Image (cartoon, helix red, strand yellow):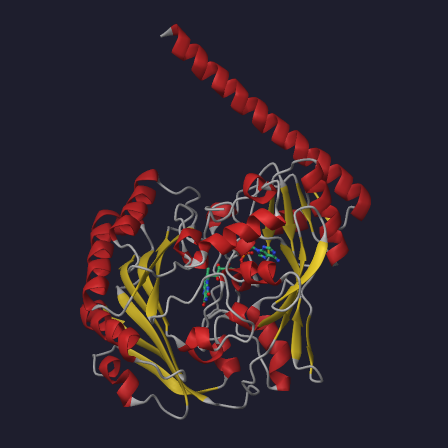
Length: 486
Ligand SMILES: Cc1cc2nc3c(=O)[nH]c(=O)nc-3n(C[C@H](O)[C@H](O)[C@H](O)COP(=O)(O)OP(=O)(O)OC[C@H]3O[C@@H](n4cnc5c(N)ncnc54)[C@H](O)[C@@H]3O)c2cc1C
């Protein structure tokens, strides 16, 4: 008994000593980085510091207090920050748009936060037909700059999302036509863990790093510049698409699920795009389902969307739309709730969708009264989405079959700053009850941190090999939160 008590005390002392040394390390790193870059770029308190620390989309990340926040203005600033983070063994995190739903993936306490607010330039060169993006850009802001040239980048489906999306893959309403957002990348400037700056592309000596960055999330370095092949989507006046949202009552959920499974199985036309948001708990209004449908043309073809359009809806907002209009249909900028994601992936099999929905209902019966929303969000991933790649394969890996990427989206009440353990356990149970169909990759931008996403990539060994090559001391996995499995 005495021996085990002594062991507990010793292990607590060891943990306390480790925490002390981590905060000493980050203080030392911050002091040296501030000396090099000055107190405007490196801050440890004040209004700007507070706004950044509290500015995450998920409230669960807004309570972290970084030892300092570095606001780089150029790649060289990131190099200085990273060299010192590495030298002093300091914990760190990187922030672009701040939308990560995973605790600690874009925030840190007792560590250095690199936040890209000061690097948000967007430019388009018509001669080369390339868009250059700094990492602090949000997709709505990029669209506002680019539409006058008739081009756009294929970003997220909410205007407030930032460029972190590109490193996870990136699903857009138009991805069936234009591909994964990351697959339109020409090259990326990347600061490696040691502080070295390299440019990675599909054809240069860093081609393995380039591929790993397209789905490897925050594990392969800090990107300081993206150069992207734009899509020629027209200006804000070019209403090349038809579509919008349709609202359905909760009583339509089963019919919508069946229609969704059929859509995923049967629709191969790359001009069609959709997302299905099936909601089982909503404390703020009656439960309802919201689906978005788009078609590059002047109407929604009945052969593609007919099954959905036959289901009685409560309201519809469908009209001719430009790509610009579509970018701003969803803002996604609410910052008062804690959020939690989970991921799965199913082929278009009615039984898989029904199983998933029943488990979500079960979860909601247990916890729904304590949540704002519990939703199943389905993003169809047809084969055309992989075939559209302009820059070779990405790290996620084409499974050779159309499927739906499933996002469990759990929204906690406003102001609730901690995730209750029993609900977190419930989410993990839901995830375990609804596994991906065999051979399908999970989507890292929509997962729970407990999920081993990289292990589901068909070419997982290549990702691990790239990680071993570019982070020989395994610094990133030791000193920053992010996807597991490397
Ligand atoms: C409201 C909402 C809507 C969404 N809609 C979509 C959608 O339509 N399609 C889709 O694919 N996904 C969507 N997502 C998921 C989204 O892709 C991820 O949340 C994405 O990672 C957000 O990027 P960010 O820059 O806003 O967030 P951040 O939290 O700032 O970044 C996300 C991750 O990337 C890392 N990171 C960011 N920038 C860099 C960099 N320059 N170098 C290295 N690491 C970096 C961060 O450390 C963090 O781990 C949505 C999320 C939300 C909350």
